[in-house]
Amino acid sequence: MIDHDYSRRSLLKQAGAAVTALIPTMAAAHAVCKPPFPAAAKDTADRRVRETWWVSADPHVGYPEYDEYLRTSVQDVNHIESDYAIVLGDIFEDDRSFLPQFLEEIGGLKHDWTYVLGNHDYDRKSERNSGAPILPVNYFSRQIGCVRIIALSDEMLEYQSHVTELGRNQDRWFKDVLDDAPDVPTIIMTHHCPLTGRRSVSAFEEWLADDIERYNIVLWIVGHAHRWAIDEDLEGFGFDRIKVASLCRKHGDTRPCESALLTIEAGQDRARITMRFRNHLRREWIKVLGREAYELEVKA
Image 1 (cartoon, rainbow, N blue to C red):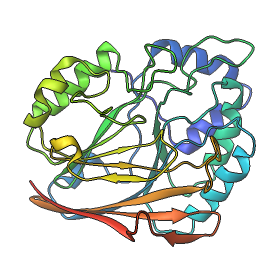
Image 2 (spheres, rainbow, N blue to C red):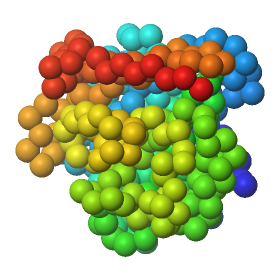
Image 3 (cartoon, helix red, strand yellow):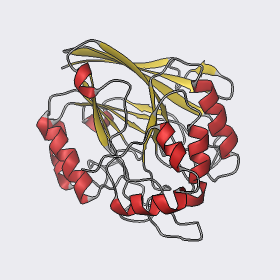
Image 4 (cartoon, rainbow, N blue to C red):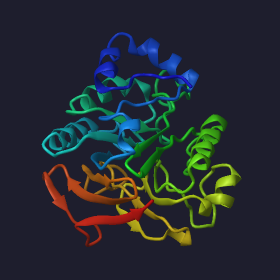
């Protein structure tokens, strides 16, 4: 497993003249990124902890007005108590030339951040048109008290597929992590929704569709849809799904610059998961589908 430092400081440092040479090398390696976290994972599992993550999706950097929306969102989040951030894919508009602009805008955050890739995060509109991932394929597991977060990237085995596709290495890693501790309450974060109206689980290997009920998945958070949705006990699998609205105004989106703040308060054997919803243009908390917040209590 290859380790890279993707803190905002290190990425911004690399984003200048070196970015043109750097990204093809990283993309070709499909490197696994271990993001920096506000506290070491080994230090949080045995004590009461509280962390808040900014969870956003679909900034589509390169689409008109993207810079205004992303910059406005970052400025607003900096005035909210939070520890970390994750972007749930479709960071770009299929063009690697916008990487420096994205790094400049997201680098304005007061804390570190990470990402997963979506179907638009591959270089298909630049002069190079390489088809390679614009940022490295990133996936990781993070323990917060008794709760585990697993984040997975779309490896786009088929262009513009609208289900999450994992490469062999990522898929094997995902299974190993789940099998290592199947009873741990788990939040999964991906770009695409895990289910597509049938009893299957995206384009993951068949083991997940067959074995998903063996694992204590409690919540699946996704982007891609550019709209809010909260589905409880999704298709009878026993976990909830939340679709996070987009930062970018695209496909007729009427309310850009909306995202969520996810707070996990967890100890050794129980946890409270809360998600609040934010409009960054108005700098105010909003209701989503009549809810001021999503709340879930879990036991290990």
